[in-house]
Amino acid sequence: MIKQQPKIKWLFISLSFIVIMAGGIFGLKESNLIFTKKVGEKIDSFNGVNVYFNGEVGNIEGRNLTSDNYNLGLKYQCVEFVKRYYYKHLNHKMPNSYGHAKDFFNPNIKDGQMNTERNLVQFTNLSTKKPKVDDLLVFSATSWNPYGHVAIISKVNDSEIEIVQQNVGNHSRKNLTLRVENGKWKIDNLQILGWLRKL
Image (cartoon, rainbow, N blue to C red; front, top):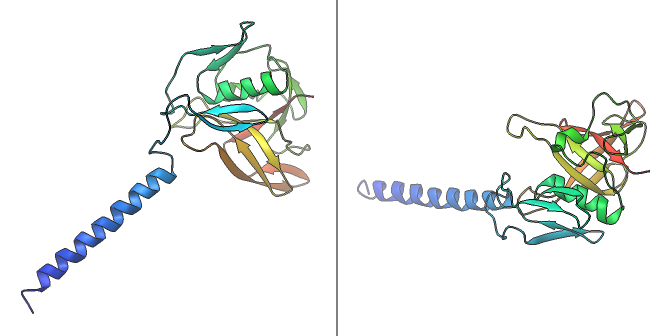
């Protein structure tokens, strides 16, 4: 019996290792770190505008220009998707067609005022106006992402929004909590600066 204890111990360690590895692989796949698509492959579509897979977050496949030379951005970054969405679905060109994702939000503009660089009304993330479908959502820069992030709001109810986005791995949709705070609308995410809207 004493001789069998080391075998049982090693069997237990081996099984534990297998379980941990399997869980780790599943977790990586679910967290978008294991890619299952090819760069440039369609992974989603919203209102007829495709979302494409970009591989690694920093990957760049060249600049996407329209036939009239309007700059949509670097393929297949988040900015390229939202600008392509606004161009194709909302027939909107931004006066300033350049800039990182975080630059879409101007902190000097008050809630509900016009952002002239984008020709869109800007709302802060504690706004008198509730987010709407088609609004362009802007996330701040972080220590791991100095450029920020942008997405399109695809669904809204009184307690939640859904966003559609590009360059976040295998998945393109995400739900965020929406709530009322002191009579104003707030999306429960500290990175969200606000949203922009075409009137």
